[in-house]
Length: 129
Length: 136
Image 1 (tube, one colour):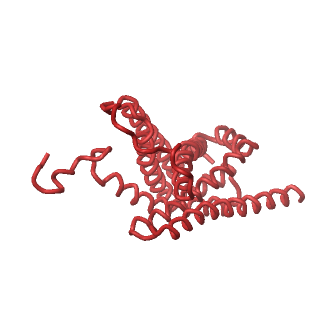
Image 2: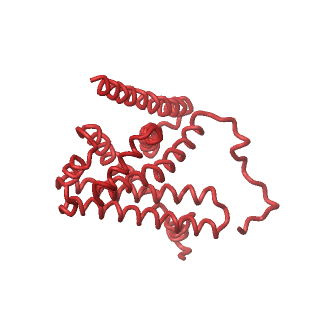
Image 3: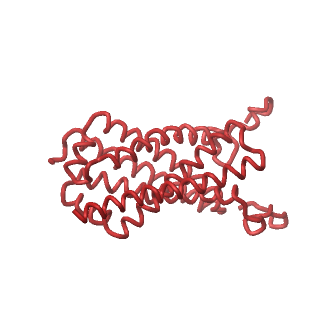
């Protein structure tokens, strides 16, 4: 670790050991969520019904499928960062902290992968209507 | 882990008098963590069920349309707008604005009232629509 400049002394510090990157990505994904989640909620309200055929038809459209994939990435990245801060603040033992951050990474990445695979399967016509 | 128990701790939740800024801060975490788990799982379930087939999807619809399901959707509606409104307040504070005591307190109160109002309006309209549909 550098001992010359100010940035050299603080680089790699902070509870996440990544300086301000965690904070910044929380903001970037927040803007992504603001746009994509608003679109998603409004679109759900505008769907004529939630039956299987309607939902498959909606997800199957290119712009909808891609927006849903981007929404999943933005939301699951954002919730991974947010839950990590909560774990870091409220779990004081280092072992528990590592365990919970590990679990929430599994949840965010595994859940995001499941959602994205399902969207793509529907969009590529893998589900008979 | 390596904390010296002889050193004093800073005053914590039980010491401070509750104010709007403090309440909205913990509501932001509660609504965020709640959505991260509940809305996250519901989103995954909805998509995997739709991608699996009509039977899996009808199981999802049955649970989603039960009284318990509606309770969850109402809670998530509030959590969504609570997190969204206070998230926008955070953007304002991120650019360095809104830290004056009166403005900050006012902002905190606004972002706690607005989500409740939006939730009531949305669900009143849904209930009205459902009631109208059943009457026909």
